[in-house]
Image (tube, rainbow, N blue to C red; front, side):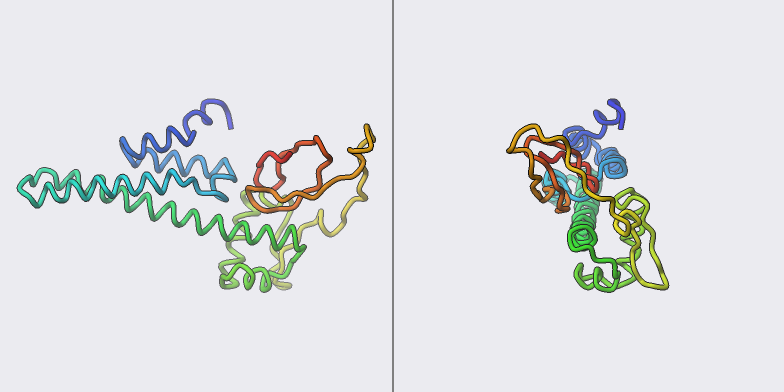
Length: 208
């Protein structure tokens, strides 16, 4: 994502446009989610708060409209309708993020490949899990993976043929042993050496 795109899809700008003219804010949010995995995995609470503000303004304009100011009915439709639309989209994104984190926990942390078991753990039907996993593959969550329809499993080549682990040169006794940490963004486990920092392979969250 270039600097111009980052500025346009910063959370502050998204929330600003939601309040000023919500369709632009919704477009910016969708653009951010297409380029930022964290935006999908962790729906920003500010988006929910913004939807409540818009619905609150809509309620005020509705009361004004029914109390003798019929021209306020248009404002009620714009703000009230916008608040409902933003809330529904944010709720859909939150549910999607919850499912994605469960999939990552099963596929990465538990090394599970059976989609039936993954679907059961996530609490979704088999066809929903297949669709979600395929979308995650398309979005780059599982590099090189594909769905084996006949075997009803997700196949990830790098997990089938793991390369022998090679530790980096030892600089001090403290750095000789890696530690397992859980990514705060998606929950995937990663091994890091003390003082090392990397971007999570699955959601790009910086781990340290």
